[in-house]
Amino acid sequence: MESAGKYDYIIVGGGTAGCVLANRLSKDRGVRVLLIEAGAKDDYLWIHIPVGYLYCINNPRTDWLYRTEADVGLNGRSLIYPRGKVLGGCSSINGMIYMRGQERDYNEWAQLTGDDSWRWDQVLPLFKKSEDHYKGADQFHGAGGEWRVEKQRLSWEILDAFRDAAAQTGIPKIDDFNRGDNEGSSYFDVNQKRGIRWNASKAFLKPAMKSGNLDIMTGSHVKRLRIEQREVNGISGPVCVGVEFTGGGSEWYAESTCETILAAGAVGSPHLLQLSGIGPVALLQQHQIPVVKELAGVGENLQDHLQIRMAFKVKGVKTLNMMAGNWYGKMMIGVQYAMFQSGPMSMAPSQLGVFAKSDPSQSSANLEYHVQPLSLEKFGDPLHPFPAFTASVCNLRPTSRGHIRLGSNDGALAPKITLNYLSTEADRKVAADSLKLTRKIVSAPALRKYQPDECKPGVEYQSEEELYKAAGEIGTTIFHPVGTCKMGRADDLHAVTDSQLRVRGVGGLRVVDASVMPTITSGNTNSPTLMIAEKAAELIRAARRGTP
Image (cartoon, rainbow, N blue to C red; front, side, top):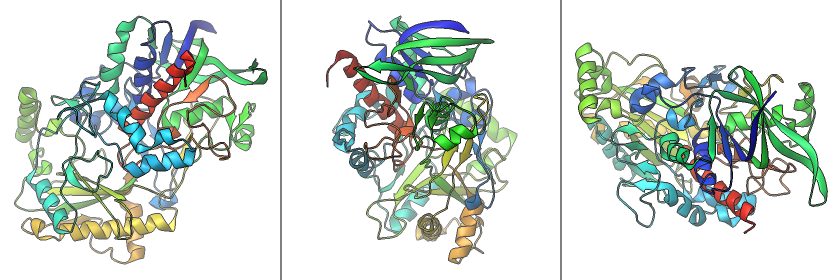
């Protein structure tokens, strides 16, 4: 095994969190930082053209190509489960939607961790710190930061009509989803710069490369953490001293003198902990992995937003199905983007957002709609040969819980991903209620002139049981896994990290990514992950300086 050198900080994973950490930690000129990424550089053309997510997801050039275990709640179906395997991680292949969630999300984190620094009013400055909002700085937004936020460069008559219909059913029109209460409808803001994807690698990593104290190794797959028994402050225990990885056909070891930071995501981070002997004892023993530290929660508490995709045929209005249905339409779409970086090729996967309550008893919006001027059978399939739109709706606060678990002690093999979607009565009820609400919106006067005709799942699904079945047939992931290394109080036996994201009972090791969320945020999860990394960088730098 060859030595890759000695570093103050080793960051495992070059995704959103890893890029932020690399930028912030390398600002201290007296330290050496190593970032290890299993994927390649983000120099693939389709990463940067917004519609290119179609060519990045399920592509080994940019995606880990995970699949979920067959899910009873999805009528036995298994799903592709994209995770970015490239610099920038999921920010290089995701939907580019800038979304923070709701104030209540962060206040709940504060309560669950016993740490008020996770409250909304405390994390809002962290969101603003890195933000470069197109409207400039105000009470809720920042300007001049690395994370560019812009308006989308298009609009659609059918989406405007859906927004009008939502208003007619009592869902207000708003102009900003990111002020702590996102109930209402608006076009999503996106992480783009003049119609080009703005990923975490461009925003944070590329500027940090000039620092001279940051090394980046791509194409390098971490196999396990190296953990030794050491005495720290008179107490003996396990301490992470580095990582073992493969790259360039060789095996390597890199030593960390201060901390190793897992930023490998809600799938990768628990998997690496388990491979390194940190996790549920029975699971580790099953795969002949020596137990370094028993932490029952590693890989548990997996949460995700299940989206239920309803599609409606329409008449007398433009949709992408027909625009992209012939060579001339495709050519004009290409010309529009080449000349103006606008039009369908600048589209985020979803353009219009609606946050609503599945029933009046909800204290805040618990549904999120992603509305699109197109339709297809499933991701990767061709567009339907008729004009249509899709209204995908997801339960923002699912009560179902899944897990990430070793399938083998071979780190080159993928873990088993079990979501357990719709496994609780509460989630099934929200799914049925959301289908009913979608039908209510679509039947409102604003959409009537387009004669919407439900083609997916179909009007034959009416009773509660039939709606549950429909949700299982058409439900799919919206790619928001979180929670598998959750932070929590000392008396929470399933908390993997403390509120400062330090792994419990293991020195020199933190987890900094979406896996530390104790509960999922009420919206898209990329920018909350960025905020977590911003906060962690401050904690790590303060610890080095010996300040609170």
